[in-house]
Length: 105
Image (cartoon, rainbow, N blue to C red; front, side):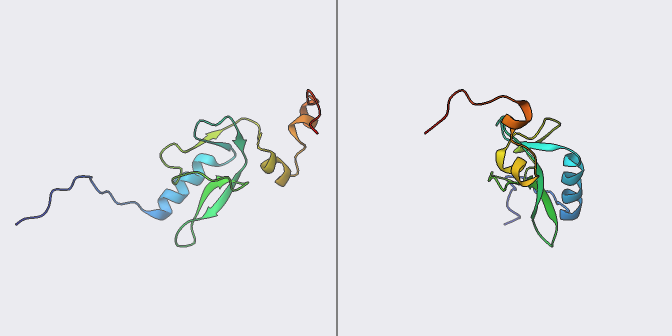
């Protein structure tokens, strides 16, 4: 018998090139996860061979590597409370002057 038929084409991926490309996409930007309206600050997570990939600075979880649209770059202001707090930014309520509608017990 010959070689089995490849059901899914396999293409090589250079980890260093992939990491550099992802960092270039998110350089100077923030990110969104999926279709969420929440904007996160960009941090880094360790990947392989001591390379890193961009990720939410607050360590919010998601599925995938971010290469197929799970993470999208944005120029919008960071709205994630954990990311804002970690960066020393004021809360959105303080920054916009918009208070809460009612106090929760």
